[in-house]
Amino acid sequence: MAPKATDIPVYASALAWTELKELTSAAALALLPIGSTEAHGPHLPLNVDVLVAEEVCRRVAIRLHRRGQRAVIFPPVSYGLTDFAADFCGTVSIGREALLPFLVEVIAGIARTGFGRIGAINHHLEPAHFRVVHQAAKIAAEKTNAIVIVPDHRRPPLAPTLGEEFVSGGSHAGWYETSLMLACAPHLVRDDVRRMLPDLPVNLPAAIKGGAKRFSECGGDRAYFGSPATASAAEGNHLLELLAQAAEVALLPTP
Image (tube, rainbow, N blue to C red):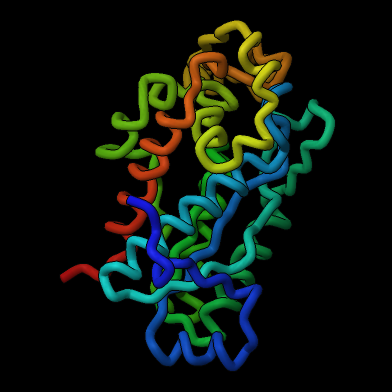
C-alpha cells in the first residue's frame, strides 16, 4: 500500500527543537537507525546497513502512525564494529571499547530529551556488533529509566521467513541484502556487476565457529557471499515489510 500524505515519516534532523518538544509531549516513540560503513561486494555501496536500517525505520514509522502512535526518526549511527570486512578498502571498524560508550550516550541522549520509549533498529549483523547494541540499550535504559527496545531479526520466528540464505548466514551482500537495496536504493546498486557475480554459498556461522576472523578467511575475497545475481526488488520489498512488521510488534507496548 502506498503511503498517504499524512503517513510521511518525521525526521528529527529536520525539526526545530520546539517541534521535537511537542512530539515528546505527545509521547512519541523515537527510532534510531544503526548500521555500519563496510565493504558489501563490488556491486553495493559501503552504507548498505545504514540505508536498510533507515528504510525499516521509515516503514515502521508509517505503520505506527496508522495505529495512532507517533514516531520520530533520529539521524543514523553509521559506524560500527565490523572486523570481518576490515581487509577491504572503505571499511571503518570501531572497537567495542569506543563503540559501547558512544552508543550508550546516543541512546541515553535521546532519552534525556524526553523520549521514554526508543527503538534501536540495527541492521549490521556482525555478532560482536549486535552484542554491543544490545548491551548499550540495556545500559542506557538503566541510566535513564527509558524503555529501549532492540528488535533482533536474527531470531525466530522472524529469521526463517527471511530466506534460506539469511538463515544459513551467507547473507552478506548476497540475495538478501542485494534484494533489500534493489527495493530501497536501486540507483546505488551496480546492476551490471551484480548480475555477473557467481554464487558463493558459504555458511558464515559455521565458519565463524571454526575460528574465521575475516571474510577472506571464509572464502569471501570480494566481500560478498550468497547469490546477488538472483536478487530482486520485489523480494526486497517483501523482506522490508517483514522486517518492519516485526519491529512494529516489538516496539508496541505490551497490553
